[in-house]
Image 1 (tube, rainbow, N blue to C red):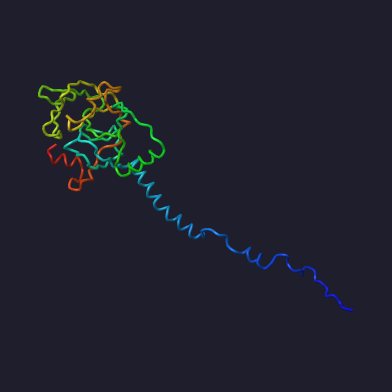
Image 2 (cartoon, one colour):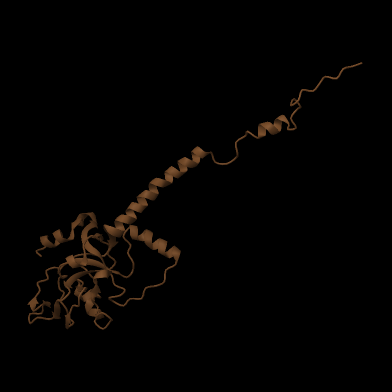
Length: 244
């Protein structure tokens, strides 16, 4: 009589095959964690740099390109300037150059911009391509000033005193248009150095606000020209060399 070998409890063969057991330990397909971490670290640097640039442009200094000849010969078409955003409107003085959003002061139409167009505008702004409503002009009248044209000798008059303007483009009269305005609080009377080719406060006397720029719309004060390289330097220093 043949004896059956007793089965030891718990010694039964597993139901899964060796192939199934081995497959349970195989790594999942996809990008290895180490490679994903390296990709993420590579993105962090440019993202931080972009945020720093955006922060500097929004709060400290911003680049702008000169699109027209309204400020010749102080600023020429194609000049690139840096504008300091740390100067409050209350600190501005007569003769300062400023960049401002002219949409309100000059009653300009602002086109609707979609998300993609807004992103493109932001990227262009990083290299100095400003909005079409961004203007650069010279401050002639401060809040409370009376500005008129012209004094008996043909000069602009501020608070009854004729103003010497050596920055005017050669051959240009201080103004061929007569005006007499009182600058309201928190507003600025601005004009271009190329008076015959500048659409400035004079051209918008009939608009709401009388063509005068609200302090809140001033982006900043022109600080330095960084292009072209042969004209690199402070705008004020260049004016002083020319005798201002």
